Amino acid sequence: VIRMLPVEVASVLLIVSGAWWTASILLALYWERRFETHGRNLERLQERKSGRDRVSSVVGGIMLSLPAAVTLGLALDGLAHARVILYAPGWSWSLPEAAALQLFGGILVFVALPLFTWSVYLIERYVYGRLPGERTLIQRGPYALVRHPMHLAALLLGIGWVLLAQNFVALVLLFLLE
Image (cartoon, rainbow, N blue to C red; front, side, top):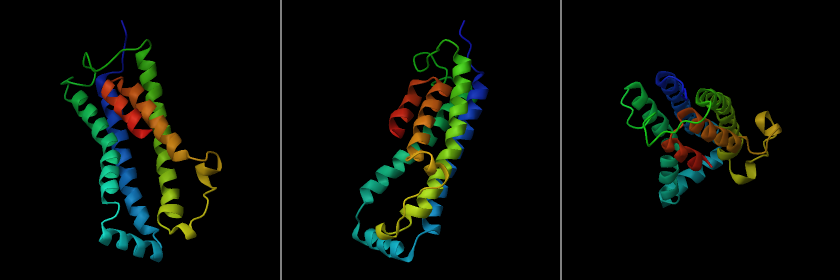
């Protein structure tokens, strides 16, 4: 018999991580405006007037909101004991040592989320809020150890969510984040 984490435990971990992801994205929007230089503000207003990048903004918004929608959807399904998707036959799989892999996935998620948030803060402060000529190479925090910590965090999040949920729907996150 393969034992998995209680559905309530997996669901709570998915809710907390989905909420943290959402908070990080909302903070990124705030930080981008907070650290925006005058020149970048004028450039952004000009881009808005011309309609440039409207499609990429919509696509980016959808892609950034999907991890929250998937994790929260799986979690609510689990908490409602509906088992339409989370822990449902056909949607979920059970690996040997499933509970240990789920715990490992949870650890990956909660190591990756602070790394993601910290990386987003630094990139918003020193890159996205500035004109190209004003930008500097970030060499502090996680960027002192890894060239692309946000990408590393996204990969760890995708793997962690897949291991935690052990669900085919969560595989979408792994491919979406990378």
